[in-house]
Length: 395
Ligand code: GLA
Image 1: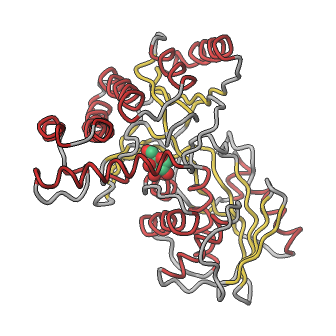
Image 2 (image 1 turned 180 degrees about the vertical axis):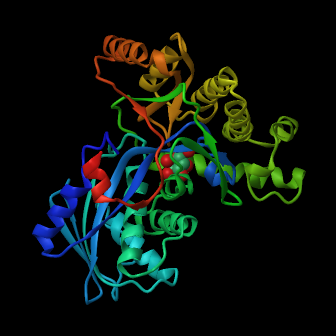
């Protein structure tokens, strides 16, 4: 919390000024994914950590069935009638808020109307899941304002549905899951089929270093859904040879090698990324738990190569940042994190090498691309919950 630039106290105060009542403040974090990219919608494995950057939502119930939300960042207020829900979003920021309200209701939770103030310090468009942080923060706040329990996994699924059906982005469940269920000091190994997870502690001598390329990703556009379609086509074409498979999760690297001739070349490459990535996630978990940081780093580097060559979701700026980091003393591994086409890299770094890594990356990136890169250390935080204003004041 210490690194937050948006303080819950300020958001609560803004709420008091606007709505003349006292609010409780919910918080939900952004995320960095250590490894396991595009595997979530293939029923596979991912290993993200929740960031200390988060979305804050101050909320109090109303007597009617209106949701009114003010965004500090946009300086705009929007309203939504729970009894006359819009069928889909309008490609504006409030879609994430109203989509969650509509899907909570569609999922059987009777909500009270509520006033909300939202603010966030999750960098936007950087592949760090600012939208999932907003969705899950709003779910936490609306449920609390309605006197309903926040069940993290169920809330993550509702938030994902809001993004799929209301916003119109066919994302998997990873971002919403980690925003709801993150564990301080650890990454989470999430099985995106069973929706079970287990913490993978980050050893005290390790740091997760994020470098923002400041190139904006565009996976809300066609590229993300294209990749998803290729994976689904792979399953369809492999099923006659492998029997009843539901997803690429059910295909091993050996299966794919054996039957890849049945797939168009590009589909085979897309599928190879997914099936090898699933294996790499499990290897990275094993290695981190065993203290074998070099092996974890090797899996991250192999993931980067697979995203670049087989899934083709990186870009020159990202490839440069990852390659350059991989060559620095004290860096175990480095790769792009998130949906792709820009955004951030994540590197697994020895704590005492962080300052050198930061300087080297910023300097080299400026020389190569004439662009600034922000480099920061992620302290894995907890998933959604209330902010204790007293504790924040003390920090
Ligand atoms: C985006 C999506 C996630 C996941 C990643 C890629 O962040 O929201 O569901 O698919 O891309 O791993």
